[in-house]
Length: 418
Length: 123
Image (cartoon, rainbow over all chains, first blue to last red; front, side):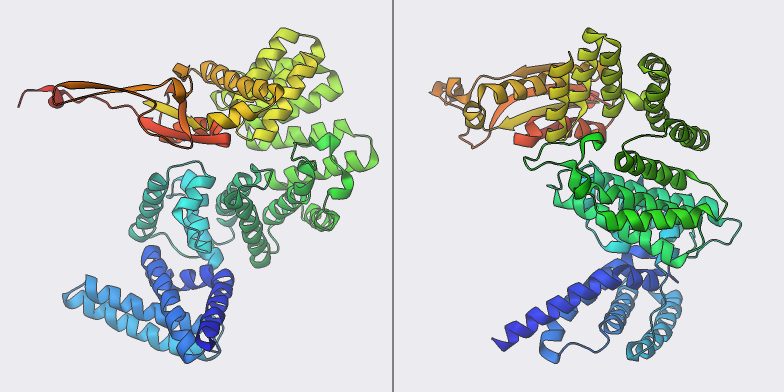
């Protein structure tokens, strides 16, 4: 009875440490060797040892230090198994020194937080852009490949292969574990922020919150975004991204009604928005605007702020929204931004003007399988009275949507307007 | 690269739906095919009649056996297929996730066999 209770307690503490310190421990273990995969393996074996040791010997007063020491011993074991001869001896001496250092840390010295440096390594220019977000999720948070694969719509086998390859690249091509210096920082930080936002967006697509993997992904991305603002409090784009995610997260509960049906922004119940998050985002945005360095995420956050004001005050300042979109388009050149800008154009200059912009965007391959493009087209065509064409555009939008509630919503719009 | 998307679903679930829901579900499949066609990925598709109409044939020891019913009795049955041509497996997964069967059933993705010359050479 008591042993099962202490087993349970050990598990609870191990879970809490994993939640709080997983990335910190991986970062510290891999910082010198750049061998992320070995650090992960060693840490997971250390967690396994903890679950057998702690229930018997009691939970250590410094569980992080205990895990770090155990993981280091595992790393030495790995090295012993892998290497022979001169280099092995050298490697072992290095590990022995590190182990001593870890013993000191095991007492009371705080483990340095190198998570952001690890994020920069994961989002390094030599790492393929599409694998950066999955890599950060795995290495910093310990999410498994199958869960990440589901979130990014990839087969688990392909995802774990990509992750392994990326880790090999970090080890072999000498990617540094450090926060880049001032000159380099803005460009390099962009890649880190893009990866965090990619993770957040994948989480966001499950608007119903029915898919646990996806819902958690948005939370984890918020956590990483917060970590960036804590470590680099004077980087406006980091703050901008965090504000943007807070705005979006604040509306999560409002996107479904009681029956689980999709509710568009214009019809959302304002009382179900999380106003604490919105206030926090507004405060961040004010702080960022005084920093005098505009960027993509700040502009997107400002657009979210405009949405909030439009709904709260009941009238919109479309010319100001247009200006924000113009600036954003100039910065990003993204067809998705151009599409959203066209919808603002529809409010200022009418649906025909917006349709002309959409027509010019139709060439872009990236939009042909993008549901919002077809939904926007359908909406604008309806407003112009081109019923047959609108019907066809709705048809494609419905076929491209993977969320059943949004699909139902689009089907209703189609039958109402065509 | 060609992939076969095999849509498995419980036909009884469909039959239990109200006529409106059935229409909506059927419409979703039509839209899915429309979107596939628009993207240029569409090759072929078909909807199968329920497994109650199935018969199976097997020849063993030179004797032909014909049986009523499907090859396997399962909770979800093969109800239709979509043959698509897309650049890679990720694209096939993206289309499978859009297939309405992935919500009320399961979609299996199978790449088509690409014949290698050597496989047809006599040993």
